[in-house]
Amino acid sequence: MALTPQILVNKSLNLVSSPETYAQLDALICDPDSSIEDMAAVINTDPALVSRLLKIVNSSFYGLPSKIDTISRAITIVGIRELRVLVLATSVINSFRGIPSSLVNMDKFWRHSLACAIAARLIAEETKQPEPEQFFIAGLLHNIGSLVLYQSLPEMALEAMRSASDSSESLYEAETRLIGFHHGEVGAVLIENWGLPDKLACVARYQQYPLHAPDHKQLVATVYVASVLVDSVQLGQGIPPVDESVLNLINIDALLLPVLLERVNEQQNSVTDFLSEG
Image (cartoon, rainbow, N blue to C red; front, side):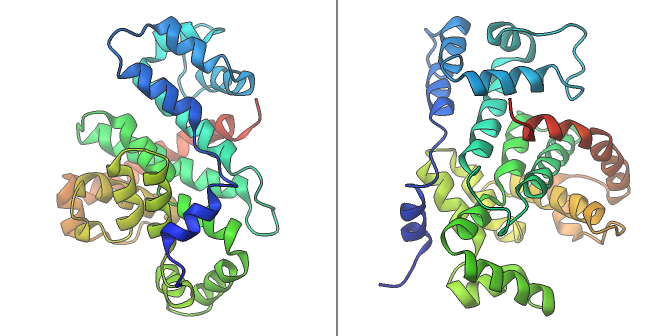
């Protein structure tokens, strides 16, 4: 039987736990009879998560005037939807703690992903999109499939990276040639198996080809542009030209991209609060 993204993810689910606290919190948020105290009680069952969340909420990322020392207070100040984002972010990062550094620098991986999340939210806010926190989550998870490949097919994943680095072949092309599918497809299946929204799976699958996305084109295109911005910083290069059709899709002027990039850089230090242990 040929290896497929679904088969690979099924095997990986034994190693990668789903974000259970997030699922419980999400169910409460959808329940009109639930209270802030109910939500706080769910989060408080995970002391490490509580510690990390409070550290993030009290970081420069939010710049709140007074210290927040309880989850109930955090929900009141930051908001239910925002806290749901933070719970998912911290839970997903914890899910992949076991990948050895010989395969991938996890801090570097998450710094990139979190920078994309910040950039995507900034673009969403600039273009007046509803629920900008969803753009943050999409940016955070867009490359999650790579971690499944590192964990389950380390040798082939490394070979694909070397091939892409040594040739004009893209990583997606190298992975498809060597494995039969690319990390975007794997990420989409993982997101679906975790029971997260379909639009997040769509971003993972079409992140490099936003115009090909059958649905949620604006979300996919926003994460694509966010990734271009972050890559230009990490590669020490200027912002490359972005397809005008993609910019039109998210209704943003190319001249604004350097300004947004500066704002991403200003918020970069805040990602350490997501990465550090509680």
